Length: 192
Image (cartoon, rainbow, N blue to C red):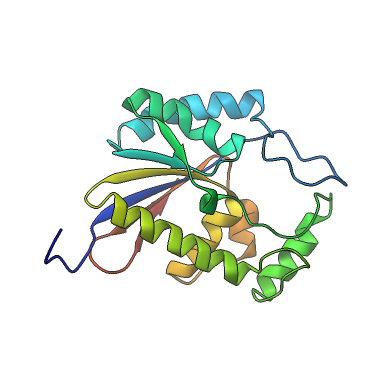
């Protein structure tokens, strides 16, 4: 709107439900589906998310993220659109059973980046820019955002203190975190 100096929007971050684990020694597959338990959890969550009266449902293009918010989109009579910038962290690390050691190191040094990957600080900047664009685009609305655990954690870390590796590691699947941008900066409301 002309003359307006602030944006008002609510972003509802939805970390995807349980997905089929990645195959060690191979690149992560963006087409990994939800498990049967993940599909059931997404269906159970749909009523709660649709009850927030979303004006848009936007997701990472990864299958597991889209599948988590698709039932809520259907319930709200909306389509899921995808955005590449909402994808999971490009850690530069192939799936490995000891991923936690590598992730912990990255959380301890957010500027560390593996060859071909992005640092957690870069992910935070990407996540913050992505939700700022969504807030501007859907000013006055409620946007459901399907994404991933590290993406959500780094976005929350960019908003305020107290978000660390244990928070990210222990985030349930699915998880919901609500952000409001009442004027010029984000406020984390709560997570479920």
